[in-house]
Structure formats: C-alpha cells, structure tokens
Length: 254
Image (tube, rainbow, N blue to C red; front, top):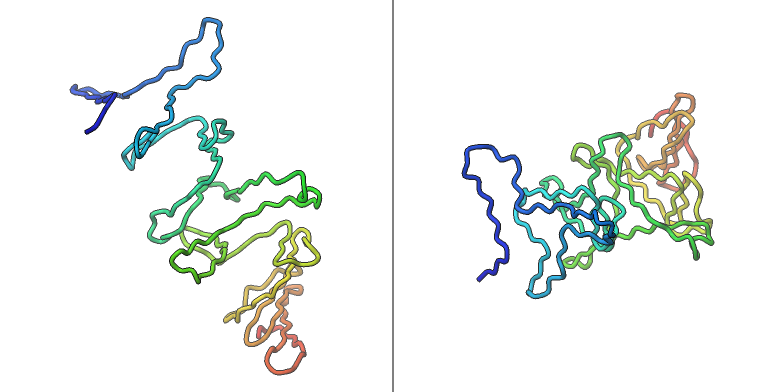
C-alpha cells in the first residue's frame, strides 16, 4: 500500500508545442511592507524519521539532470564554493573498460598547465608555526580485506588520451625521503635517508641538456653517469662486478 499526499501528473493532449512544464513553480516571496525576513526557504524539508529508510529527496532516472545555479553545501549550511563538502567524500570507480577500478577527479579546464589542486589550511600556531614549516599531510589507506598480506604503494602516473604514461613527479620546493638528519634540503633538492634501487636498463637514456643536468643509471653491470659537455655526450662508469674500483671514461655508451 502507498500513501501519496501529493500526486502530480502533467499531460498535453494538444497538437501544439509546450515550451516548459513546471509541475511545481515556487516564486520568490514579496516583502514590500517594510518588515525584515531573516531566513527564506524556497523548499524546506524537515527531518524524516518515520520509516525504516528515510529519504529527503529520491529521484529516479539515470539521465535526469539536476541543475543548481548557486552554491551547494553538504554537511554545511554556509557553503563558500559551488560545491562545498564538510566531512568525508567517497569517490567510486568510473565505468570505463580501460580504467576498471580507477577513481577520478576530473578538471574540465582545457587550458595548458591545468590540474587538480588540493588546498590545505595549515596550522599557524603550535609546532608547525614554531618550526616555520607548514605541513599538509596526505594519507592513502589501502583496504585489502580479502588479501591481508598485500602491500600498497602510491604511484604518480600522467595520463594522455586515456593511456597511462611513465611515472613522473615534479617537486619544486624540496623533497624528503625517509628521515634525513639535515631536514628539508631547500628548493629543488632531495634529501634521502634510504637506499636507492637502480634497475638494469636495456637501453641508453636520452641525452641530458648541455651543462644543465646528468643521468645516473645502471646498465651492463655498470653504474653510469651520463652528461653533456658542450654537445659531447660523455659517460663515466664503474664496473660493479669483481673487486675493481676504477671509473672508466668514454664518449660511447656502455
């Protein structure tokens, strides 16, 4: 049995064109008597508690569009942004055969250098301010309820035209790996308190720019430093097998 307090059915039996159909049209109140209105609600739903499952608004139709021009607040009645969430936000996987299991934050801006910015209001008092370090912490929890022995890692991979590219991370203000005694190394530097694992490369990497950078890699059982000196690509390498500790120099890649 259903109870329907209001049941609306709009019908057009004519042959003409109806531009708009409004099942419910709520116009703004008129306040011209000199009084003041503190709060005005175009639609107000009180707390629904009478049933086992209580829905404030329930709409069917996968292709139905819900449009709101102003600001939307979830968990806050004073939103400061077009979509303002106070509390947890869950994002579930998209339905794409090439990206199964992947979640996505999407930025529709088509200009160059766009992206998604995570904005953290960091502390201005306490230990963070005393040490002159503003800390924004990002934690990723891997929940593997059916595979308790699995481990997780965070992988930053750029995507182009729907395909993942080689992992790449850009660091502008310094990066810390582990707990180095010297603390933060400064802009553009990396402080490491851990080991670095070089995989054996099957090919020689692209040449670095002249006088700007160098490549360090492992190839043919050698630790190789590749650099550009005035347009000449040079290689210094150390053979890792045996007991020798002599560096070799060549303009030919090992």
